[in-house]
Amino acid sequence: MEREQKNIQDKLDEARHQFIATIAQNMGLYGVSDTNGRLYGTVLFSKRPMTLDDMSEALGMSKMSMSTGIRALMDADMVERVWEKGVRKDLYQSHDDWYQSFTSVFVNRWREAADNNQKAARRAKEEFEAFLEEAEDPYLIDVLKHDLEKIDYALHYYEWLDEVISIFESGEIFSMIPPK
Image (cartoon, rainbow, N blue to C red; front, side, top):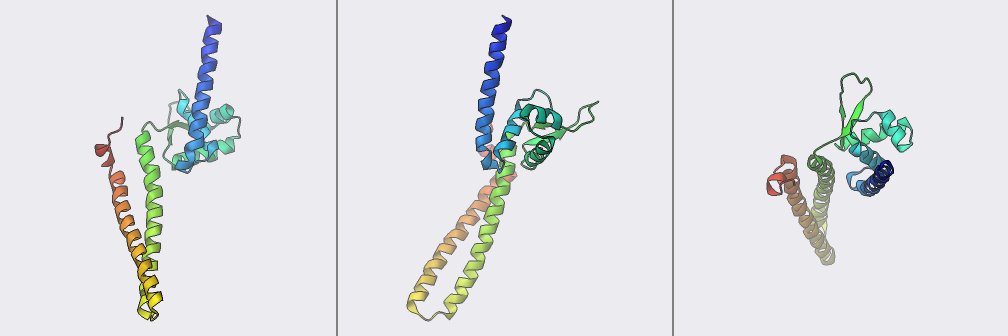
């Protein structure tokens, strides 16, 4: 009977390892490295909040690497520091709300990219319009008008994307598509 339980524990550990490896492979979407993805998986499956020493031991990596990794995971809103009476070291656990973590990470990335692209499109539009005012060659005028149409399309897209981002930022997305 005891050997049977050990076999189940070994199979459980392997299944966790496979799931954590898959999570780690896909963490690039969150701007998180594979290594930090494995760290996240380790913290996720821990029954109790973990110290940096616990993480270091579990992953066989330096405490400094764990400190750097946990900061990246906290920045991504994937883990949080918690307090436990009688424990002097910092403790960390995964956020329970994956939906909020997702929206925090992606909204920040979308907002930054959309804002940068929108600014670039506006600058380009101003420059192209100035060129158009000075242009006399019919071919060049045609090219500039074509390019301005493309920039206007881009600006409309970024306005739409701003609305999508706002739906996520406000939490309205959860009334449209409720968490399961």
